[in-house]
Image 1: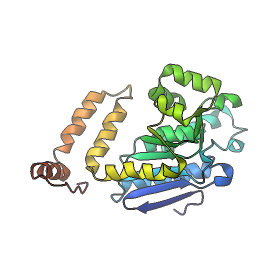
Image 2 (image 1 turned 30 degrees about the vertical axis):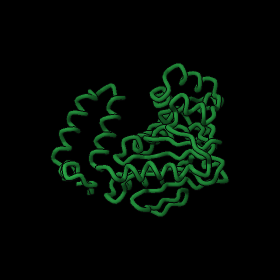
Image 3 (image 1 turned 180 degrees about the horizontal axis):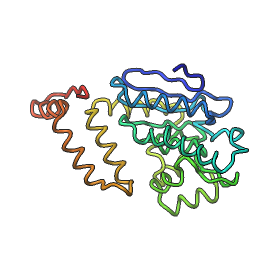
Length: 260
């Protein structure tokens, strides 16, 4: 697929995805979501990719929200389909991706932009970032998992406050309440995300995928997370990576994992 709205490239086993609509503050439209869905599917299936770095073009915005003009006249059925398709193909796909996805939040992460960041496994924010879910100012609520993921990350009280007031918060406050993992100067944002991914690259890929699946299961009401953990733990024993990891430990050398 030839991308028009995003830039995607693999460098040293890291898949860089940049939403490239700087003049529109990288707002999400149908085309962006379609391309993101394709890119995440590619990352999921590629043996070469060990991690994903997701960011927005420029220094003003990660993603400033959804492109409101596309759905201003939608009916109930159309609104439901918009949320369902987006959640399934993009936001849930990111959350369930077996490769760690790090969001490098450069500037505004509002509405669908914050929902996109929350779907990622790790969030690093620049000091100038502003985060919020302003949907109620449009007579809407978050529709891409925002009510669920924000509550999981910061708790019910803070989630309801952020959503019902529609207030933006600073990167520093986002860090204090657990919405982002770290806050760094803008100039260090990408390098910090790369630092984390480069560390992850050295670990066993299949074990990382199992860990993501097990952690995600802790938040699902219809599954027993402890049972999933037991299953994923057991699966690790039949991998070549397990043999390599144990062998390297006993031989006091650095392990070389192949994802097998």
